[in-house]
Length: 208
Image 1 (tube, helix red, strand yellow):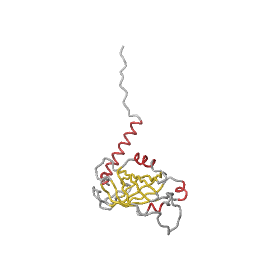
Image 2 (cartoon, one colour):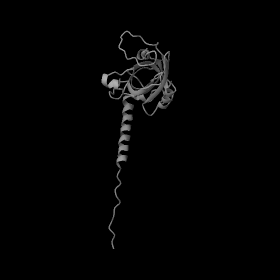
Image 3 (cartoon, rainbow, N blue to C red):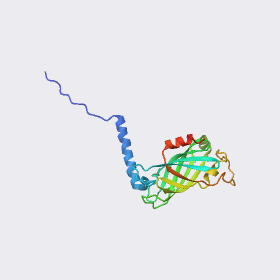
Image 4 (cartoon, one colour):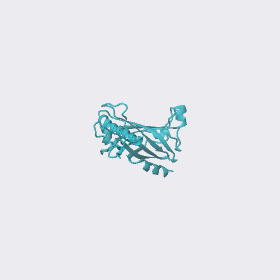
């Protein structure tokens, strides 16, 4: 008796494997595009790293207590160009009361930037997001800003009185509208060092 000829079934990628391949291709495309549009992103903090991302944490010591800042920065590729040195990302701000606030983060550096960012000036701006007040009243307070210079795995600078203007002396957010109100405490100098989000979580938990 002649047995019917059978052919092995064709191997097909499952849906999960296809999604993995798609996301892998997107990741490779992003890295290649970033390498062309913002090569300096791979050298933030001094050393070369495979992802154009930098994370840092610093503590601003004030008379009202300690404010702990955590930022995640990466090149803003929405407007690519030779002279675009903008960064975007997110971050957290931990108040002296231990309150943790999720912050939108933006930054800018000087134009004509090469690969090396050491010693370069950077402006960082942060504002609170994901609150009922921001959705209803377009109120994104607190908003704070920093200006500093890149060093080895760090950014050293000061807050230009932004913390004192954003908070009351007791560490609560200032919600008034007075144009003549001065800062609650003087400008603060501090340094953001390379750190992970888990380090920030531990520091904020102890900041009470």
